[in-house]
Structures are given as C-alpha cells and as structure tokens.
Length: 565
Image 1 (cartoon, rainbow, N blue to C red):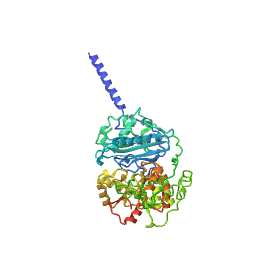
Image 2 (cartoon, one colour):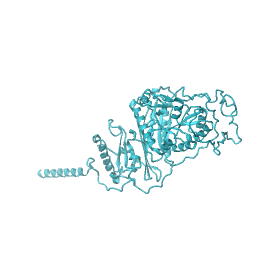
Image 3 (cartoon, rainbow, N blue to C red):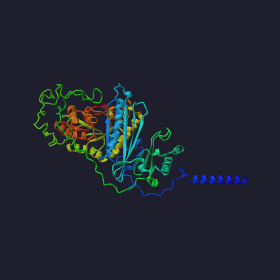
Image 4 (cartoon, rainbow, N blue to C red):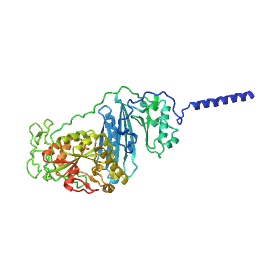
C-alpha cells in the first residue's frame, strides 16, 4: 500500500511539473509575443507620401481623403425618395469591374427598396453615403478602405458600411486576409493585435480572451502597417465604436506574408477614350423662352416649359424655332453629310465651334450666366480649369471638403484665373437631416479646408442635393453665408451622355441663369467643350455665381437661397 501511494505521489508530481512547463510555453498576449526573427522593413519607403502623414483609419471621423491609387468615381442620385453618394476608386485595370460592381450593388439595393411604387413622405426618404481611402505601396500593392453609412428612414440610426480591397498589382489579383498575414499559425499576429488594441483603448483588455482569425476579416495594406478594422458590435461589445488599429510591419515579423519585391514601373493615369459627339440640337436665343428656369416650382430650378418662346415647336427639324416668336431654325438645314452647322463650325468633331476668348469687364447690358461645377475636385478638375482659361471664362467650383487636398494645384490655378471655390459640405451628406451642431461642423470644416488651399473664403455654399432645412437657414444666417441653388440642371449625374447634357443646357439656358453640372464625369467635360464656345458665340458672358449675384442682387442676405441672378 505504501508503494502504491509513493507511485501515486510521483505521478501527481510529474503532472504538476508538466502543467507548469506547458503553461510557460503558452503565448502570453499580455506580456509579449512569440519570438520570431524580424524580416527586412516593408515597404521600402516607410514614410507615407500623404500630406501630414494622415492616419487613414479615422477618416470616417472627418479626416481628408487619401487617394493614392486610382481616381474617384461617384454614383449619384439626387432625386427623392432617396439620395446617394457612393465614391469608389477606378484605376484602369482588370480589377476595376469588381469594385465598380460592388458599388453599383449598394446603389441597386437602395433603389430596389424604394422602387416599390408605395407613396412616401419626405420623412421616409433615405440616404446612402460612402467614401474611400486608397494606398499605393511600392507600386506593388494597393490597399482600399471603403466606409460609410446608409439609412432607409431619416429617423433611424444609420447602419455602417465597411469594405476592404487589397490588390497585388503584379497580377492584378485581389488578396484575401490569409494572403497578407499568416492565419494558419495566428498566435503571433493575434498578440500584436492585442497589444495595439490595449494601447489604443485599455478598456478592450477584458474582451480579448476569445480573439481568433475572424478578427482579421477587414484588412488594408497601408504605408505604416496592416490596418485592421473592427466594425461596431461585430467583435467588441456595443459600447465600443468601430475601431481601427495598425499592426506595424516591424512587429509582424514572419507573420507578414507579403514581401517587398522589385517595384513595378510607374503606372500612368488611364485616359478614357473620347466620346463621339453627334450633331446637337440648336440653342434658343439668349434671354428668351418660357422654360421654368427661375427656380420656381419645386425649388431646384427644374421646369417643364420649353425654350421655344411658347410656340410649342420642337427645335429639331426644319420648322419655325420660335425662339423669338418668329424666324427660321437657321441651324437645322443639313449640309448633306448628316452634320449640323452651328455658329460657324461643323460639330462632327472635325471642325469644332471656335469662339474668341471672353475679355474685359462684365457688361451689364449683355446676357450673363454663372456656371457652377459640383462634387469635385476630381480627375477632370484640371481639364475644366484648362478649358475655362482657354476661353477666358470663370466658374464656381462647389467641392466636397474632404477632397480639397487631392487637387490643390488645380484649385489654386482656378482661383488665380478668376474662378471661385465654395463648399458643398464636408462629405456630401444631406445636411437637411443633420442637427445644428453637425451642420455647423460640416460647413466650418469645409470652409477651413478650402481657405487653406486657395487662400480665399467665399461667403456662400451649395446645399447637397439642393435640400434646405430651417436649421440650415439659421446656421447660414449666423455664419453670414448664403446658399446657392440653380435654375438650369441637365441632370448629367443621371444621363451620362454629352449630347443630352449639351442639348439640355442649350435648351434651358437664359439670361442670369445659374447652371449646375457635375465636374466628375468625362461626358460632362466633353459637353462643356461644346457648350462654352457656343454660349460665347451667342453673346453670353460666363462668370462665377458671386459675380452674377453681385451684378443682379447687390448686397446678399445671409441665410437666403439664390436660384439665379
């Protein structure tokens, strides 16, 4: 019996020793990491090229956009019963379609929800608002973070949207999380994440015992490390907001699977092919027509009247144009080749309309219009600036505050040439749904961003989607700002066709109009290559909104909405 107890004691002692040894070998995430030999620093240029070395992750909290890979494309929807602003990157390679389809699906889901035929009141209108940051690492990898929110009913709490894309540019292949970090043996990388989370917010420490590979579902390759996004309520309790933490490359060691290879050659910015420009519909005479272009009706300047002076005659064909109540449609006679001659030019693209540049001071006795270009700055901002300079005309650029840092040179040039830059809010949210504090923050932040780039602050802004609330009027009044809408809208966000845009503008334009167009689409730019010289040949002066209103209104009233001059 004594021998039995001795044997049992010996076995118990060995079990204790084995347990202690196993405990010592277990990874202790609080104390440190499993030792792995460090690897060479990745990427090759550790210093981010972003101005101010902006941390990308908290961009949803209001930091400027970072766009290093691709250019911004935007899906817009301005009409009720919902508003959409979905910004996503396109770079001219084989990966574009997948990202475009993802963005389009977001829009389609919103459209399907509201395309039920059920009558809805304004209190039921919804909104989707999505942005992105993109990073180009050693010309080898692209990391993309899409973030935003949607709500089907304005009164409900917005639901978060988060999506990440990572691309290996050698093969233009999308990378999964397991291609970026080692998730087969995740202990080390989980330890790095645990340490970074505790450094970011010590309250997380009590909720990290059950971390696993799923915590790496949303990764972005950035300059300083691998960005991990933890959406609200998905991994941590509801009292934590969405968290974003960077795992430094030097801490990841052999757990980092992507490695620095020879950089790819510099990728040129893709230039879309030119859009053919068939013959346009001849335009009405300046200052005439009964189109509802004075901002009456529904408040956005959209009218249902024609620009034919009330005769009801279509401007297409060889009949009486009626632009002045009489006379022929002088431009409708074809030249036998199917092209329409107008103002001394053949608009088949071979011999474009030519106009002398605008010069000299504004003549109050001549027709005048203001051109306002929305939703940039973007890939076509510089081309618009060049076009304006070519013809000596000016415009008002209505920009998103969080994009101003992406096109500083173009915006500065625009202002130096006489154009102006005003805000359309920080991130294109529908300000009419926001509180006093949030409206004020959107306007102030945008104004400050513009002033830091251009050195000027114009006392006006354009309400996103043209929506205005009493709260917005009160804030604008207190801040000494006016709100500008429009009287001519070709809906180029909806009809991405240069001929449609040209025809609508020329049909609806009249003296003292404010024209709105989106400066982010090639079809819009193509249309204005024809519109601007045509307007000049018809005797219009093309100026900024401020210049128009100063001429027609004199002193402006803060808090007031202006549709035209």
